Image 1 (spheres, rainbow, N blue to C red):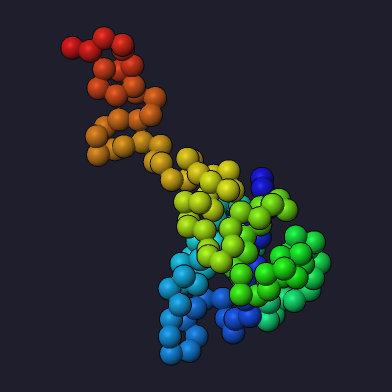
Image 2 (cartoon, one colour):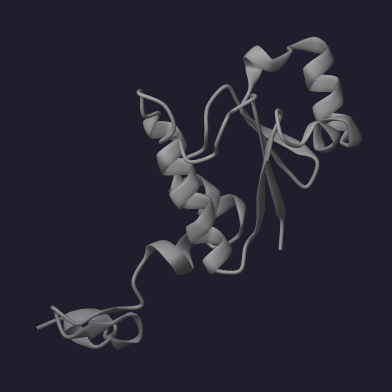
Length: 130
């Protein structure tokens, strides 16, 4: 499974609910990361204020910080490859990056229609209908 690492600027907390102004992007990424962790994804966030060694130990992050600096954060890396800078990936993007995209996004059955993916739809998989 791919290793997803999100490197963030110095924050007092990761949830975005500290202080008078709530940062909705932090609230969303917190929920998204927890959701993916619950699905077994290898995903982690690193905060510059609380984990500066994580920034120093990763060659890709070190190079990014040297060239762009903290103003380019957040930085998302998958298996050592930069996939996003300056913004957080959406939940759907993170699921895809983790290799969980279709399985976690699309339901396996549609009980409201009485269909499953294997049923082949209204014609039961037949090529000629009606």
